[in-house]
Image (cartoon, rainbow, N blue to C red):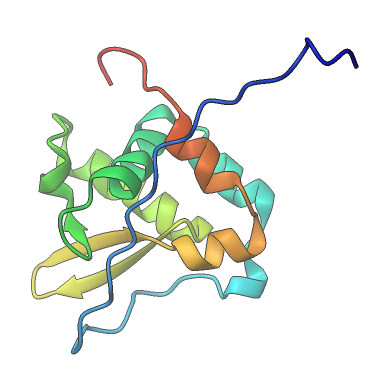
Length: 131
């Protein structure tokens, strides 16, 4: 390839990985790291709303984990519950029960170990207007 033709990649935004606080409740059931399947993870991320949720957690987390209200999504609670469950069951997010609320975080370490670069692509994704 001629030296004048170079591929320039835009630097993806950096994911925030916040330290795990002490005394957390146990996570809800989720696949073990070795059981994470690429097709399940990609299926969960194929929905634009779920992709938006994961990207927001990666780039804008203010705390270790977040309730569904933090995302500011104008969707019925039953719809959001479905989306968060799909992400957890695919192994993309980890959820913990705090009394009556569930809080989510991305399984950054686990996903990076199994599928290097995948979360960089999610962080670099640009949501369409209106998401």
